[in-house]
Length: 110
Image (tube, rainbow, N blue to C red; front, top):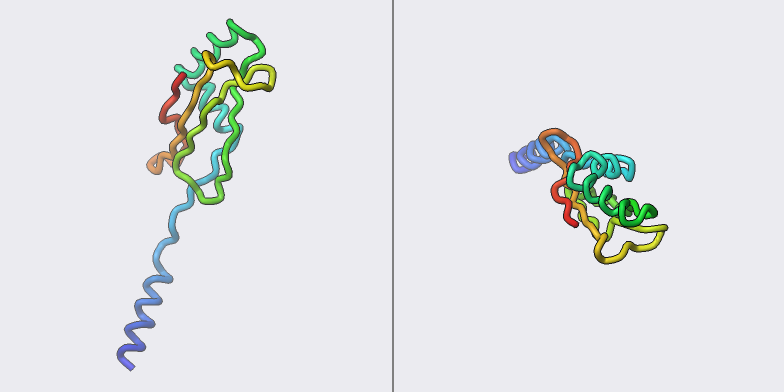
């Protein structure tokens, strides 16, 4: 009987534990806004558009059902809906900041 009560108590404690915090999905709109407000990314797209006005960022986000805390995107510049030339290529890494509960740009490289 004591073992049964002990097991029941452990199950009760496990059931009362706070749920694992969920990481909200990074939306395409939020990702575009983060890149837009990143000084390095904004400077890069300004330079690229001076060379080819048809170029812009294209952020194809992966499936986020596994609730990732970081997302890396490569080849984010496209020109006229085609991949950009190699000299205009860029990549970005997003990370979810658990303290502020917001997505941020961890790294932008061109």
